[in-house]
Length: 113
Image (cartoon, rainbow, N blue to C red; front, side, top):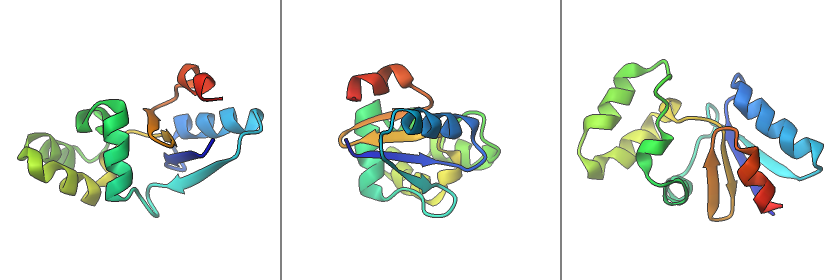
């Protein structure tokens, strides 16, 4: 398994995801979304795994203007805008190769072990 956790340091679900893998002795790589963020290739892989760009958007984020902009601009420009404004992405995003989940999903992670 090659687990990557994309999250924010102040996100409780990110902390729970890290604890889940630590308790089971599964190695993972943590990527802080505020420092580094996702690359275009990583975002495309996650979008395919979870079922589209709309699933990545966090309705409870603080930056409502960026969220509205991403929701309502042309389809071909949405990925670029989301890469520029990664603060509107729901966390944690847990990747295992081509598989990915958004949020705290221990039931799905059990199937990966």
